[in-house]
Image (cartoon, rainbow, N blue to C red; front, side, top):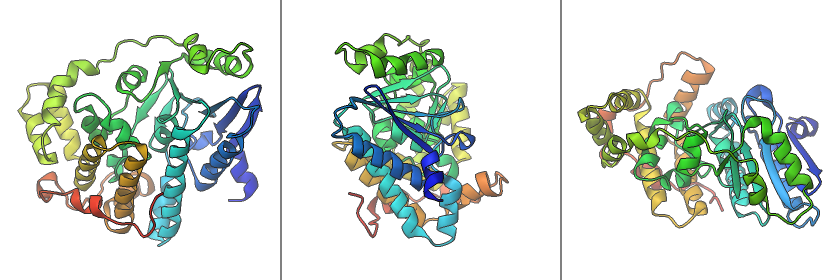
Length: 353
């Protein structure tokens, strides 16, 4: 990709006191590539000590979504082609950007309008002020391609109430605005038709009111989330020690949703489920986002370097689109007792931070 193409995929500009970063790849639901990661990082670093920029906003072009995640076709080509050094550098750069957003000295406001998944959660989920709309669809769906949640997703999942982190991490289920606010993936729901007015207020409001107070002027309480009604069977089943134990408990419940969840899990990549279960539980005992990112990086590079399911999952879902992945092992019953241990213990050639 040449520099002009990379630049066109992230719009960088200032409006009043607001530094705006807009992902501009709407035809791909603003999927991230290395050039976009670099531009976002460069802009944030340039604005760190710029007194004219008081607030930073990150959003996405188009109405389909803020960001559907990373470019998994490119990831597939790199791994199959043996360019794993490029893959490792992408993940290091992406995770460093996620940490930069979380630790940024100025308020970062993110608008997760529409589809915001995978890498999009890394950009949106760690900001100081996280906005969703009535169109928002948030998820960490990595297990559906034989992978595991990353970009700090395990940190967010592990902070959910009860065993909801295990549930959303393993199933890849989608959260709407009400779910996201309730479960700690967002802070405010602003109707999409009020976003332009919100941006203008953040950029040009003259009084010293902070950005959180400004956002509250546009915030609307979403309809109650249905998630609490499912807590009993989710907390019971997803407290089991293993993926097989979770499925067994789900099938023992009377609720139709519990049985449907068991069916769903049995169609996903067994190894990815085991690694994700281990990752969410490890993150729950960690002290901060950087620790969780380091744990994710070990697991991600294990899938890149040591396990075939990631390549197979992308092949089946995105490349050949036959929707018939051949997982190894093929079933949850064939998983070894501590199936997540190898990925947890993997040591990449280069450290993350």
